[in-house]
Length: 315
Image (cartoon, rainbow, N blue to C red; front, side, top):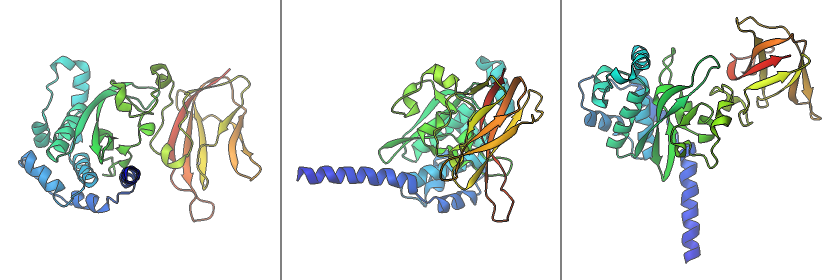
């Protein structure tokens, strides 16, 4: 009997984790996208309206994430003011953010925690730093963790917020910890949610990794941002999955493209495993890796998706 109970617990745990990965959110996204809420609605009423059609925790979480990403816009002027004089910055409380519909990251994460909590979902603020480009950062940042089906998940409403095409970036909803660590380092290391945490020195060596890397590659993201060549040549790993094409661009500090020769390296099955680069002059460059999907039209490719950047030093 005890053995049966143990097996049942294991089954329920697996089912819970599988559910977290396979929930269909299309009805949630459609519902929230068509909501029209004025700025006078109280938070309790708003949360009830957002989550009313949904009974399970995952869909409630998605609905609130959607609403924040669609309706709370990033306060760029406020961000600059907070950098210039953090002590004097007038932090907006969640109710004020709801009225003004504009906020910096810590205000957005605070709003998310409040709204998730009022929906009966355990949610925590996470403070730390983020980085993307070589030329900027790291910057202080705030994001969240939510407890769903007996497990903590990470999300970032600021980075998930709508882009120029009015689209939410769902990469930042329940992002796998091994992906988010590429750009988000929490002050409290427990919130990486990783079994083994990288050291600070290791994180400082990470290259800028873009969300599309995790769609176009099955390889763990590269851990070293620097590549050194002593003879004007190097071998670059083919990071993209089968059926996609890798694009390599090398630019100087003025964003001028550098010419080079490129030869694919094939395995016995005829698959490209790497590219041999040669003909580079001495200097310091940025090497950008992008991925293209093969288009059904012969000889054409889809729009390239940026994946990862490296500092390239040719000596």
